[in-house]
Image (spheres, helix red, strand yellow):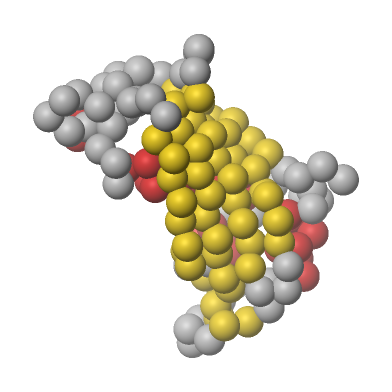
Length: 137
């Protein structure tokens, strides 16, 4: 089964940008989070529900490649996909594009913790979601 993927559109607000009128570098991670959150939500499980079940997915590593600047008020697509997953980590890939160019690319690697903050295996229901199944409550 191909990795799950999703696309959302975002238009940077003034507060997202630096004095040059481009998206401030740390805010790319916010865009990644928006994409990841919507990917899960469209699979039938909101991140809020996931936390209420007693789990969290902290970022263990992040990588961003800046290709071209994202400008203030420029609509961009955030494309998020599951790259890989195993027993203890999940890797998401991201592309940020305008209508013409790839503006940035990156990935985040996540581990799964229980509500006590202990590292645990990725829950089986989440593995099924990552493999394309819809979450059923």
